[in-house]
Image: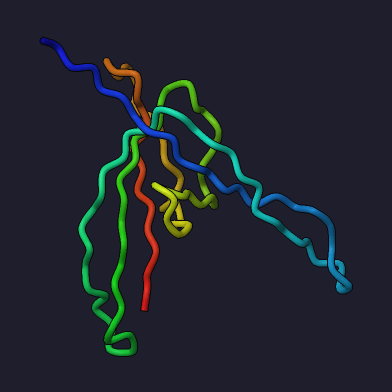
Length: 113
């Protein structure tokens, strides 16, 4: 019996300029979009090595995006399995000639505490 890999739906939150404040600085809001078939795996829960945050914990997820989702992810957040928003790390890039339906790995994290 062969098994077919399938991903799950995550929510991408993209900062979108919605106007300007009283000092004419841009004002942003998060606009949400569901993305299907993302491979998601939990990363390590690591203690934050910072004396100013003795109870800090960093939460990390690894995500691999389907080839059908080509929008940029730099500066975005992602919600995985209904949790709190996580920041996408860096500017994920696709790798050429992937033999699968997924081609852009990324990590997302947040620090609690």
